[in-house]
Length: 187
Image (cartoon, rainbow, N blue to C red; front, top):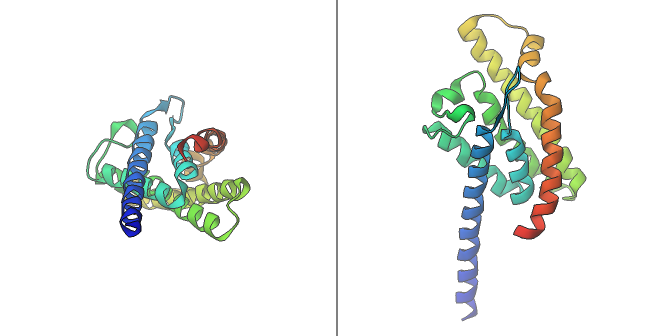
């Protein structure tokens, strides 16, 4: 009888994991559609990635990010501007979207190998964001050079990274505060 109960508990846990992952992917999609119009438009996509990692943990949060990316790759309009398709990922900014996976992987590594304190989580998110920026910038330069010609690193950083650093850090801070309030309710 107890082994049947253990199997049932494991099955319920797997179903709950799938539900959390689906909700996380949906949250990232919804936040990618929310755009703050400025000279360089900002979305809440990175905020959602941070929040999902903080609330669901590295594994489930990274899987939610992967599901989001795969949905977009097959054409579901989950990316910014209600866009979707593999072409978006192969385009100039596709590297930043794929870079969200690196943020998740770094989050997993840090929280698994170090004490999972809020300071470690924030450090993991900051380093993950930096790696996301690096991968996305390298991708952007590769695609841009192939299609439009030479471009300098500082120029690309000026277009794709520098304007986003402060807003992304503010989004991270908001995600940390909200996750602290929401996590006790969903656990």
